[in-house]
Amino acid sequence: MARRDSYRDDRWEDDRWDEPAPKKKSAAGTFILTLLLVIAIGVFAYSGYRLFKYYLAYKEGSDEYKELNDNFMDDDAPAREGTADAGASGAGEVLTDVTQLEDPATLPTILEHAKHDTATENQETKSLPVMKNPVDFKELQGINPEVIGWLRVGAINISYPVARAADNDFYLHRTFRKVDNFAGCIFENCDNSPYFTDQNTIIYGHNMKNGSMFGQLKQFGNQETVDKNPYFWIFTPNFIFQYRIFSSSIVGTTGDPYTTRFITEDFQRFINDSLSRSEVNCGNVQVTTNDRIVTLSTCTGDSSTRRILQGYLQQVYIAV
Image (tube, rainbow, N blue to C red; front, side, top):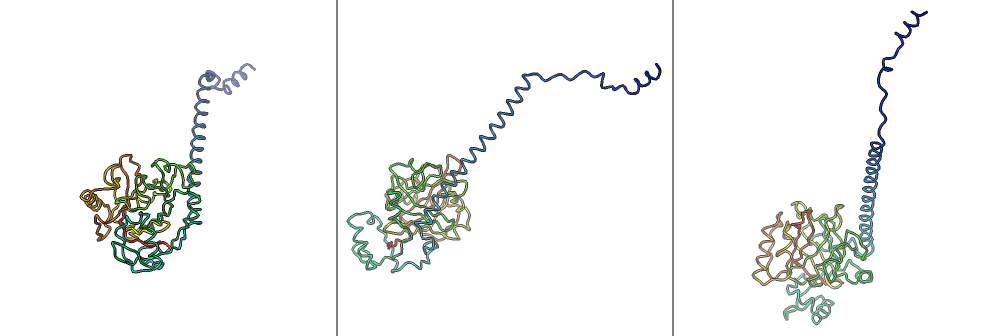
């Protein structure tokens, strides 16, 4: 019996019984692991919350501007495309002395002549084209009396109201309805005339990641974009301005592109620099010191630079 028991013990004895018992994890180690897990979950939850807030903000901004377009802009307006404007009538003379458009004594005269398809310029009677205004400014002004126009860039489907405040900070993070939102609003430089008659009028908009606002201006760094449609438009309550794009470029945050008024020699230098700096070929365009320029500006992701798109006033229409 003893031998059998010995044999059984030798055969069935588990070698693991000789291993030391595992040590229990220390309370401090368990606490640290739990704390790290809680922190990781917290970071994940906070990141998700932030992303959700960004999504809501993007959606709120996009929804507001879609609603404005749907209700106050005629999407079938002929000015959506280049120069073939089925809605325009008149001989098409250009009103070169655009400063008279902001003169309270002159404006009623121009509009009165427009009823007869004419306008007075430099003591001469010249015909101005007439175009149906696609924007319901009366209703828009009821929403925000600081609206001064509506910008449309057909090649990249930019279509937004333009506001103007007493400073350039107000609309940075407020929508057209003055709701706090990082999308902001398309707005004119506060130092510019609200009638778009300065030598260089600057209009700002955010470079949004979802492509809204001025997020698509970067597409004008591609030749096919300007070839598709080299015009943009600004609609106002009384006039419609058609601009011919002549330059698309990256510039610094200060300097001539952000200057509104020049002496003649400096203005010519500014025009020459803009033409030579363009990333794309805008065609055979002739820009002179008699022209009026609009500069669309947005950020690039580099705090030291901005992207701009520039057009010169090619035609003035009477809005009816």
